[in-house]
Length: 78
Image (cartoon, rainbow, N blue to C red):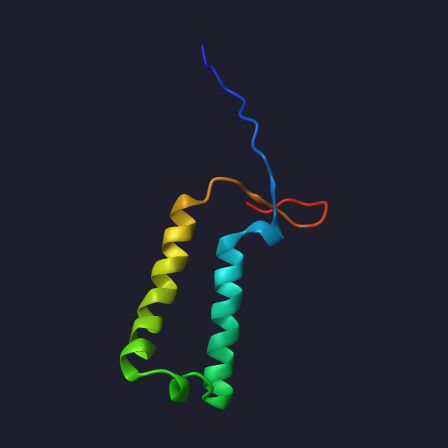
């Protein structure tokens, strides 16, 4: 006999997603750097290198701890 267990999952509004915010801020920073070289002159070379490492590490860490799917408007995105 095949037994299935139903699981109720709370949806989280998109604006409460730390992962989305980190990725949005990273994307904005990358665009500013590529188009205007706006970040490199403001930080030391070491900090600049650490930012390049920190962004994907932060994204990965947030993805690992993600527990709830996001809700966009009336829809759902997992």
